[in-house]
Image 1 (spheres, rainbow, N blue to C red):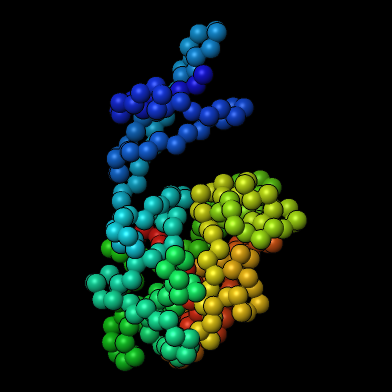
Image 2: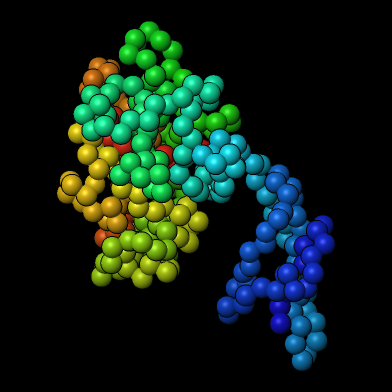
Length: 291
């Protein structure tokens, strides 16, 4: 029987029993203090006696505020970056100015300022933002300064920051086949349930229970097109894909803004980059990166 000892936190033996799979030991510990370093070691008890591992340490992350229910967004560290592992769902800019909720298709279609909606206008679904909200464009007057989209200390990731994440995951063995070249990280980033089924090895829709080894937990959300309509109704079903905004736009004409995004598909092994003119009116989910 193997147990985990938290050296600077008092836990009962029953609370700290862990799972063993070959040489791997894993467990989930709740109730730890944010922004705290913990020192850990495991011990094994069997008929041969007791055996202790070397001591290791880990640090919990600082809490951030601004989620839709007032609780902090959970986050994870990848190399030099810290990313939220849930989609943004706040409905105000950093200074408290409301981001308008727009449900009407025609109104959404012709917006050139920030807005959000629930997918399908159903509050049980995910929050989607147009790119104008991500960019902080809240006024049709181009001379009006943009607002900050994310809570204090955080921001929507740029195209370059998405690329940094991709490169980190590839270099650290998160390709589905364990290689460290080529972009085959989609499966490691995708959630473990809800995707359409795929027979293609290494895709989010194939053997879904083995997804999400990176902890990024990308899940399909549905989207809103620049016509204001929700998927389905375009070329895809909601369970087929997810599209995340980057903060990087192009074109200077506010009515012709385009922006970069990152896309995961149920039947593709790669995290794909997209950039399309007239795309700023689409409604997509957003992740956040620490400043």
